[in-house]
Length: 126
Image (tube, rainbow, N blue to C red; front, side):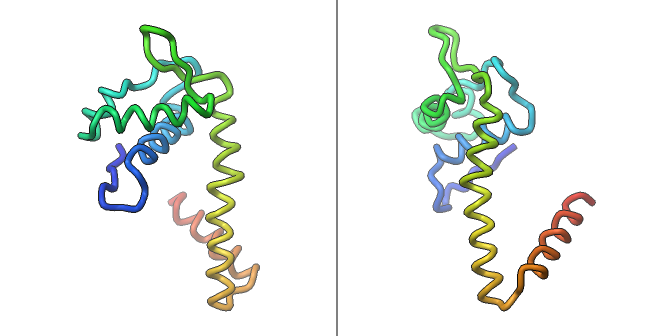
């Protein structure tokens, strides 16, 4: 379960959208499954339902979710692939760019940086 960072720089509704994306990436929500309502999310995270709705709407605008009138929001076909593409080509790329900049500041060459990344991966697998 995500704990929202109420004091952080990232807006709450963005955190909600990212949490839903993570649920999709983890396989907890599958294609054509009904997702949480804004009221369920509001109760889960103790936030305003309008804030939760904004997080849901971000994913609807990206065609990751679709609405069935009177029934709620559902996970669209190819949503998983859309999220993976977005995260690879935007989120992960920015993280790697920041890591490369920091490595250069510290005088770490490419080989050493790759070694650090490999070690981090091993530690996560343990």
